[in-house]
Length: 225
Ligand code: DX5
Ligand code: ZN
Image (cartoon, rainbow, N blue to C red):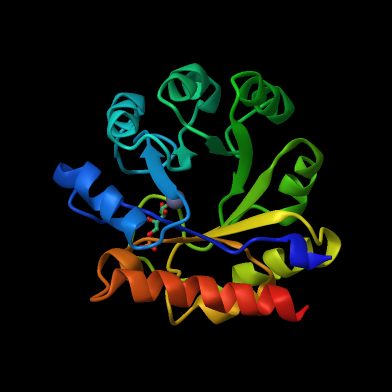
């Protein structure tokens, strides 16, 4: 069954030189990135600020084809659905923690023509997000506290990934935070198939080889099962 799953690598440009957002993003795509993971922070849900829909829209103006996922680390995800859809976002991944009516937000995202990702922080039990699997396209299990790039991978979060993979063989499961060549095996074995990697890819001497290594590792595990 799991042969239908794809191994996809989505670099995060959070720790890149953001004054060169377009060049850095294009470079990642030229080096084999399957999608771009764009980290949006509001300084409220997380103690950091990045960029919002105006910047994403400008990036879309330069990069027409790539799949854009916005990782919405914001307190009011419903507020940014329409502007992000207008900016050309393909998938809107949001944290369920601050949201009262998650199903409603999922529905609105779909109405705006985007795919839906539901995300949880390390302290949130997997049962909280499991409720929404039938109305979402992907689940994001954070492997660091959201807010900053370059943090240490939290291996204990793999329990959640394993649980989801065992129970939902065809679910797209994304991991994000501290993922790179030294932690990818752990993620792949647990069952993650969408891989976000920031510092490890941005800082790699050979981006293309690093992206390929990450994808091959996941691909091999998926095809073994
Ligand atoms: C953390 C972000 C991540 C992260 C990825 O809040 O959501 O996307 O920055 O970067 P690394 O791989 O450096 O942890
Ligand atoms: Zn992220």
